Amino acid sequence: MRTNMTRLVALLLALLMLAGTLALVSCGDATEQPPEDETPEQQPPDDGAIEEDPRIPLDYLPTDTYGGEQINILEWTVDDHVPGDTWVPWEEIDVDLGDGDPINNVIYDRNGVVEETYDVVITKEYLSINGSPAYTTAFRANETTGDQAYQMITLRTTNILSLCMENLMTNMFELPNLHTDMPWWNADSVVSYTMGDALFFAAPEMLLRDKGATAAMYYNQVIADNEGIEDLYALVAAGEWTQEVMIELSENVTADMDGDDLVSSAEDMYGLAGSKRSIPFHMYAGTGNKLAQINDEGYLELNFGDDESIMMWQDMLDYVMYSDYYTENMKDSALIPSDFNFFTSDHALFYIDMVKTAMRLRNMESNYGVLPLPKYDEYQDEYASLVWMHHDCVLGIPASCTNTDVISVVLEHMSYISYYDVYPVFYDTIILGKSARDAQSKEMLELIFRTRSFDPGQYWLDSVLGSTLLTLFEKGQKNISSVWASVTIQTETALEEFNEKVDELR
Image 1: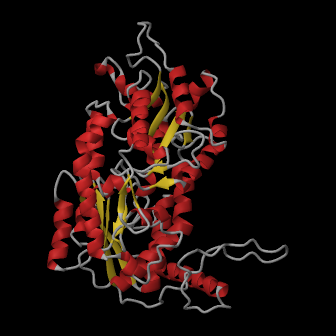
Image 2: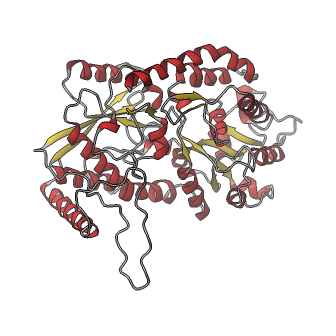
Image 3: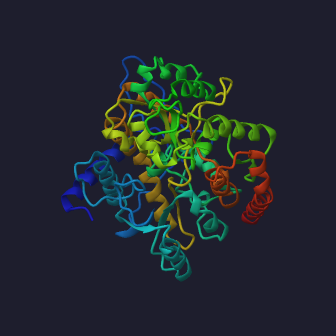
């Protein structure tokens, strides 16, 4: 609960926001729903005109109050990690009070506005999803007993399949107060998590961890300057930042530095650092492809296994994963530091990981830059930035909930405020203000977030495709055709089961 003074301030802010919204729509019907097939375009004012608030009106939400009803959100973590570490780098749902941290302050204010507007109380609870069955046990008990202990839950996508297949989640498409076509719902996440006519999980803007789990490439500016590597940002802007260019630069900087005529130790120079667990997936997504996709009818289609995808994956393994310039292939394995330390100690030009890794780079002495993952070739239309399934975060509403009118209003309003108020603070203060070292990195991060890609093959087919591929790569499997042959039958079976579920849900 906020203090009475804070609630008063938040209420005044809410009334001011409402007054501004009513002013914007005074010439129209205040109950009119926003268009379902497009969002209103914001036109610049004529010369001399007073500029209007660019926010899309939120007048389609009811103005009811709910008598102090509690909205409790179950949040996932790993091995009881708490906000502020690798698994939960930011508190995205609720904070006890504004503590001076910009992101905490704006989340506190957001929740205060929503709580006062609808007379609700927003709370959260963290439970671990691995190392112990506590999370799934607690959630399934909630569904079995019908005690409605949780009104919303967050999960990483590797854990959502069974809950969807068992009808344990609410179809958010059926809730009239949720408008998933609005910009505070990531459009690609809505499409990618759709099961026929149902949407059980998605990535609304009120979440932050899905943004932190987005793939990014970092480059060491000291090494780049020493090697005479010119403006990489210009290559990105020209659409010429490709895997071929990355490979060429990586090969050129790789060198024996300890005088043993081998590139095999921690003292040598490498082109690329990063984890074998994720690099193949990030690189493949960077080509603009997905392991699977949702078609126009809502069915899951495999987008892997044909000659072109096999060739792309084979190229990545041959010229990236199993090359001399990749740090994890050093000959003297006993001397291998972490891929992160290779980069921060100026022994690797490139480092592939996630956006939230920028938080760990704050203490790096050398300057670094941020790039999107490279395109497959220059003919590819757009860059693509994978949201990594093992660190991301999606949100759903349990099927047992009967007060979905309240929940959906709260969720929509929280996402709305997050889109306009929380996300800019998160972006500028957390990612840019404390991490990236040059102004052009801002443009790169804007591009990365604009091109976020959610791959249904990761989570709908994870157990037989995503995780199997990951395990095989870790074990050093180098022939993609053989790898695919080993999982083809299981993948096709899982695909069939998924699409049968789609039929069942219609």
